[in-house]
Length: 276
Image 1 (cartoon, one colour):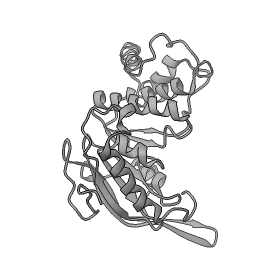
Image 2: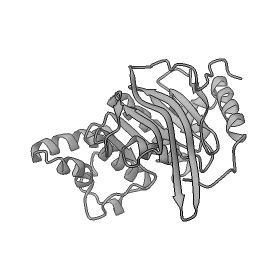
Image 3: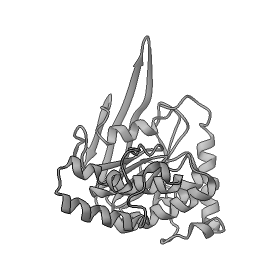
Image 4: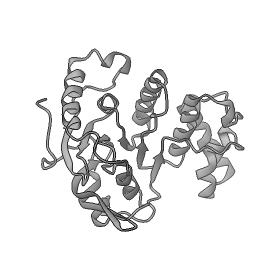
């Protein structure tokens, strides 16, 4: 067992600030015809401002549900989600959400897709153009401003999605397996890019993944949820120094140690239930 592991009951040590998100006695139950399914019950942990926290767990434990409640898109059945110490509004406009599908509008250019959330906020055309230009440079899409999504590779489409999410400067980024559909090589490139972008944006990140190696490579902490009704099994600080070169990280003994331990915890609950 890695000596840096902590349980859910242990106080969180902040990397950059006070608690941004707090889950207190969180529970969620879904009713399907005559069946009732309790996805989570009594879930407790916190995420601090500026942290990159990865959440893993078996299918059906409610990882996506947790993000939806955090974003104010779904109400808990019990307990509360606190954002800056207050119950989450519906929806929470201070956050950004990146899903596995990019959901780009095929009839809009890269520039127009990135600028969409700013148009919705009715920013001036000058302000939108300036912000979009910043985002295009940040994610490495210079030269593709007028391209349409159908003309881009999978990795470039993902960059557009990240730029669109970051355009309105969210305080928290929710990422629900954003790289799950990419091949291994492209996934590694996008993981490294995400770390670079996160370092520059200073946002808090809550990252859902099924991949333990991805969680250890990216996170300040890895929170492992149990099978449903889910609870926090372990909350592990990733004490690997930053910045991280992901191409070399797999040779780090600490990386291997943390991977092995987290897999042993997760494997206890694998193959129980369907994704919710």
